[in-house]
Image (cartoon, rainbow, N blue to C red; front, side, top):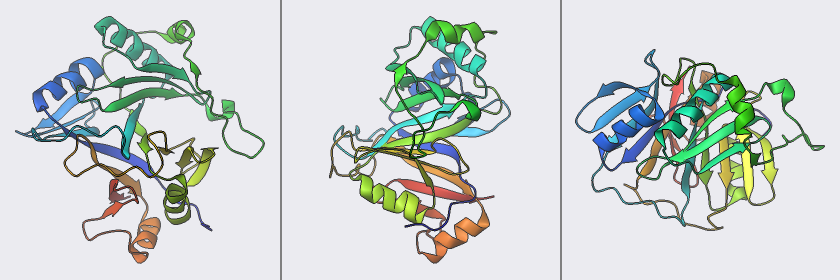
Length: 275
């Protein structure tokens, strides 16, 4: 068991492998609302107007479609600063008539779910204030999945959607994994994240800095499923920001490569950025 908690943990950027760069840029800018910051022949960097990169797209025309019965990205989640931003985003998506795959109220947050043209899962959400989060008797966060009250959300609608505002961040990542015990051993016992939500051997959410979750892990695709093959559409890696003390601890355990990369038991790759 871990005897420490990681001091600093933030997700900075998700690096996605996609099939067609132009198609994806059109979606991520015109539909989703990210700003195009930089583009080359095969790569596009997108984020907020002040130049913070949240998503990097890399085209691979030979990329394999993700196997639905394997470990890998379930969705990445974009956290907007305020509830009014989520209201504006939802009204925008409905006006675009872009299909949604869900809209939920989790008590600690309100969330909208959709997929990009390559079927990569995306959540756009706004947090409720921490003092309003509910807790179970074991100290874990109460995490129901209720239908989003759209009319109530629209009470906070104040302005037309103009893209993701400054202070938007990647709030969390959610993965399909093959084994919750293995996930706990890595993310809690080794990495030092705190378990915040747990549902038997099916779901584990973990976080740093008192958040509700930075990483979600589930076995909904099945226990013992294989990892995604290299070159598959979806998450190539994600960059994590942590402090020097936590970084050095991971280096001493042999978890970080010379390229500052770390790989979890399910072949999920992370690029570490030291703050």
